[in-house]
Amino acid sequence: MVAESTIGVPPRIVVRADAPAITRHFALLAGLEPIAWVADGLALAPLAGGRDVREQAARIARLDMPWRADAGPSPPLPFPSAVGGGVYRRSPGHAPAPPGVPEVVLVSGEGFGLSEHPTTGMCLDLLADLPDGPALDAGCGSGVLALAWARLGRGPVRAVDLDPRAVAQTRESAWASGLDATVSVRRAALDVLAHDEVHGHVVLANAPAAAQQALLAAGAAPVPAAVLLSGLQAPSMDEVVAAWEERGMRLARRDAMGRWQAAVVLAS
Picture 1 (cartoon, rainbow, N blue to C red):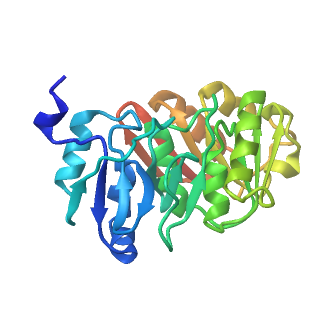
Picture 2: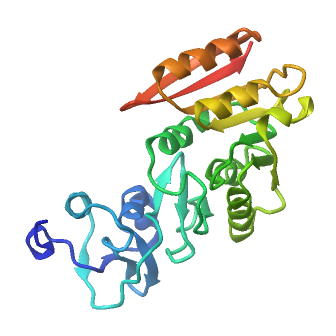
């Protein structure tokens, strides 16, 4: 690994700017691990979230505002912070969002979706393609999609997962985000969901093929208002999209990032 001093990544820096300027640039700053608001701006710990050093050096090189190295502490952070789909997601150890930036707070745990997995990023970006309304996060993992949906004011959400660790993590993150009144969480297998838990809802399904098939087996062949699909590679995505199309839905969008795919299917 190249020495940090060679590629210009101090353990901690302070971006010197007022809150409006920080808000305008926050999508970039969020990737540099904000840890505290200070008198002259925002303190960042670029190496604390575990990202690649070269990646962080490139982010610092893109900063279009003054900054200074800082000698303050840089505590380790459990996972990187980021902005995706218009939502800042952070751990309790990261700095809060600036005014006007929606945020969710994710506690540490073993549910899928805390890190920058391509499927999570694609799903967050595709939320804008879905209609507003009550949602079901089917196989919620860490709960990030349910929390983002609720934070953006898109509608109430029921988050469901069979793994009790994912259920506990989502519930704790909803509380930490102040969204526990909007996000309900329960443990259940997807194939035993009741018809009215799926029918007419916006279904967020970032889940592997077996979980997608279980969702399709839910009671009385429900037809959602929309389904956001991810966690699949091309052959499995073909099968799942075709199964929803057999229920009269239509493919509205399909994206790929590397070997992973995401799609939006809408009710006709």
